[in-house]
Structures are given as C-alpha cells and as structure tokens.
Amino acid sequence: SKAPVRVAVTGAAGQIGYSLLFRIASGEMLGKDQPVILQLLDLPQAQKAVKGVMMELEDCAFPLLAGMIATDDPNVAFKDAQIALLVGARPRGPGMERKDLLSENAKIFTVQGKAIAEHANPDCKVLVVGNPCNTNAYIAMKTAEKVGRIPSKNFTAMLRLDHNRALAQLAIKTGRPVSSFEHIVVWGNHSPTMYPDYRFCTSNGESVKDLINDETWYREVFIPTVGKRGAAIIEARGLSSAASAANAAIDHIRDWWLGTNGRWVTMGVPSDGSYGIPEGIVFGFPCVCENGEYRIVQGLPIDDFSRERILATLNELMEEREGVKDLLG
Ligand code: NAI
Image 1 (cartoon, protein in one colour):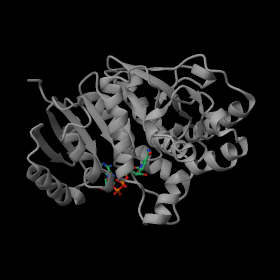
Image 2 (cartoon, rainbow, N blue to C red):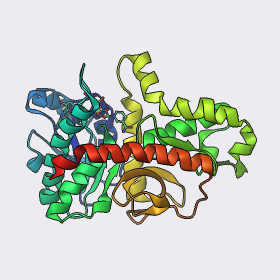
Image 3 (cartoon, protein in one colour):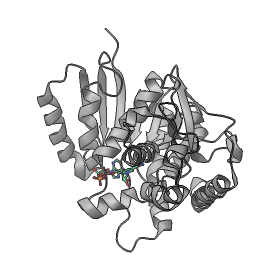
Image 4 (cartoon, rainbow, N blue to C red):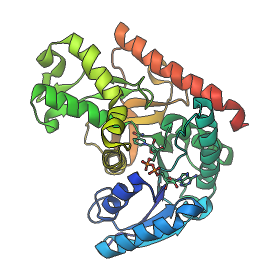
C-alpha cells in the first residue's frame, strides 16, 4: 500500500474546513487508494474547536486517514507537508479598509510562506483559498523565495470555484449537462473583476457561444452573475460559500495531483509572462495538468473585449501587489 501523504490545512476550525477535511480523509482529493495524514493549523483560540472536528473525523473511521495533528504553530503544521491548503485568513471586519485587509493578511501569509519554505516537503503543492487569495499566494511565494527550497510555481490560488460557477451557469442556460462542457476559463483575480471567458467553450464539441447566440446575455448577465456569485451566496445564506469552496479546493488539488487528461481547468498561478501578464503575478489562467505539474494553455487569441477585461483584472492585482510591496521588504 502507498505511503501516506501529509496534507496541511489552515483555518481547520472554520466553515470551509468543516466541508473540506472529511472529503480529504475519505479519499476524494488524492484517490481512494491514497492514505493521508492531516496536519491542522488554526489560531490558539480555535484549538478546542479543531479538537472537536478531529473527534468527528475519528468517528467517521475513514480507512484512508492514517493520522492527524492539531497545532497553532505553522512550523509544526507544515512539517513535511506535500500539500498545503491555506484556507485560514483574516476576514474583512466592519470599517476595515481594503488596505488594512491586505496588510493584515500579508502578516499571516509571510509567516506561513516562510514556514512552508523551511519545513514542508521541497515539492509541496500550495493552494491559497483565504482571501484576497491571489495576493496572499503572491506574498507566500515571495516570502518562500527568500528561503529558496520550494519552486515558486508551486504557489497557487483558487479560481476553481469561479470556473465551476461559470460551468454551472452555462449548463443552466443551455439545458445541457455540466459534463458536456470543455474549455471554459476565468482569467485574473478572484474578485468581481474576474473575466469568465466562454469564447473557446464547447458542449459535445459544439461552440457554446454559437449555441447561446446572445452576446448581451453573455456580457450583461453571465459575466456579472459569475463575478458576483460570492456576494449573492452571502446575501442568501448569511454566510459565505463554504461547501462549494471546499469542493473547488478538492477539484483544484485532485486535478493538479492526478492530471486532467487534457481538459482545461482554471488555476491561479504565478505568471511566466504568458498573455502579457507580468511575471510572478498570481493570475487565473487556463491550465492542463499532467504528471503532477500544471501548464498554462498557450496561443489563445485575445480579442479587444477580452483584452480590456484581462487588463482590468490585472490592474487590480498590480494595485494589490503595490499595496503589499513594503511589507515584503
Ligand atoms: P471562517 O471564518 O469560517 O474560518 C476561518 C478559520 O481560519 C477560523 O477558524 C480562523 O480561526 C482561522 N484563521 C484565521 N487566521 C488564521 C491564521 N493566521 N492561521 C490559521 N488559521 C487562521 O472562514 P471560511 O468561511 O472557512 O473562509 C475562509 C477563507 O476562504 C476566507 O478568507 C474566505 O474569504 C475565503 N474564501 C475563498 C474562496 C475562493 O474562491 N478563493 C471562496 C470562499 C471563501
């Protein structure tokens, strides 16, 4: 049987953690033959709640759960981790400016980036879920680069929920099953500036753009519906998306780890300069995964409308990067 994989999860006592941990332990992320050890990080005041989640994990008697620990020390949580899911973050409180949100999170993600770089497995795959996730991933990556043990390309951010939301809207609009769609992508920042792009999307090989044949719907309904879906969930539920966010995190890591068989998935990854996005900016790109590596899909035509949308979301990310520059030293 396989050696267990150490999976570190931060924010383990939170909402997303409660949807995520049970699915990892049941084998939905790394496969039904892959044992896992969960290394759970949360703040000191949340340790009791983490213990409660661990009691429930025990009570599931998952055959693949080979061990678990809880800690408030990032150096312990990330020790030898092959996968790190950075879910815990500082939420925006009342009266908190965007600038404060960025700097509060910068503190968290510099500490965690350093701990990962010093203690995790040298090939650790990192997914940042905690918002602002693109810039938090950028901060963790930049901090880790100072230590230099972990490749920068391993620091990714979660755009997969946006990708899945786009698929769901297209399935509803066309009445076709989600499984019939290929080649959707959401470019840019996980924020309302994101650009869900259906130009290459097919359903059973047919162009979805031609099937729908309604550019006004695309621009005025589809794009804003996907971009503001997070806010719509908060409005309806009184809490932010949790089960769907956990599901997207599972999808992101599973596809990175096991491959996509040529299918496109959206991942927030540090740019290598593709599509004119400055190197290092963590940006939603269409990716395919194989042998534990992702690759950005190359050579897609960018029309005027798409260029405008991609620049808008890029500008926001450049402003965020500017906002944390001093904190990175
Ligand atoms: P939550 O508030 O229920 O849980 C967050 C947990 O993180 C808490 O247990 C808290 O104690 C912990 N935490 C805070 N700071 C920490 C630190 N420095 N180290 C370790 N743990 C820490 O929040 P929820 O609903 O689970 O969401 C978590 C994050 O995910 C939020 O930032 C949210 O905005 C983000 N999110 C991102 C999505 C995406 O698509 N990228 C989608 C949905 C949520």
